[in-house]
Image 1 (cartoon, rainbow, N blue to C red):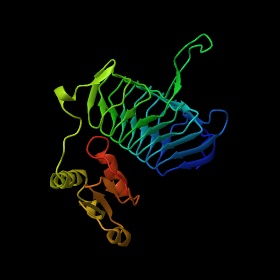
Image 2 (cartoon, one colour; image 1 turned 30 degrees about the vertical axis):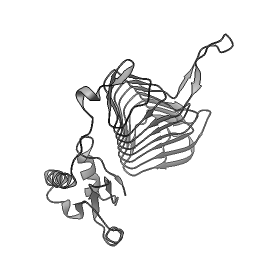
Image 3 (cartoon, rainbow, N blue to C red; image 1 turned 135 degrees about the vertical axis):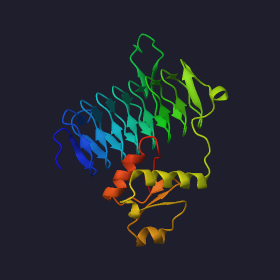
Image 4 (cartoon, one colour; image 1 turned 90 degrees about the horizontal axis):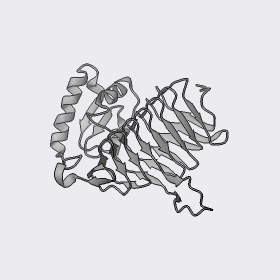
Length: 264
């Protein structure tokens, strides 16, 4: 399929992905080097992606009027949700892991640059923004170049200027960890409990089409190769991607808040 609103030397667009006609995807000065967007993604109205090297994983959504820009690569994983009117800056380079949420009107910055250095301004830096898996910026967050470790979370209106620790919750301006008071974003769930919960989701979704979908806690390579079944492994949160209609429908049923799986 030819996308008139994508200007790049190398373009890969996955199956069932929707890019609104008013969106614009291009490089900094002309054609981007490469644009890679996975399966079952959505890029909304008036989204601007101005980046020479951009990738977006499967089942990810970038909502309307969001701006992504920068000289260095911007790579976003599977199952991302980027809320409307957000800014993702990649001047210093930006990596966002799988299963991340960036709430509406948030700003993710990888550089500080404006003041006159000849006049003595001390603030000039470009630094990689590194956001791990399952990180959630709830909304209206402003984030400086940091490392946000897996499962960390910033509540609405947070101004994040320092690294975020694994599974801790932050709030305020400047944001500080409040996990000692409110707990953590994620609690440990036993594998047997995950199996039960996923089986319940499967039954809620569709009792007719589920014959080629199986919930497991382990799977061998031989089983993967010798069947066309889509296995959802609750131990490592992966699924054997087949691209069937039932698989896609079930994945969409699970997202965004029931369960998130990435390709095996």
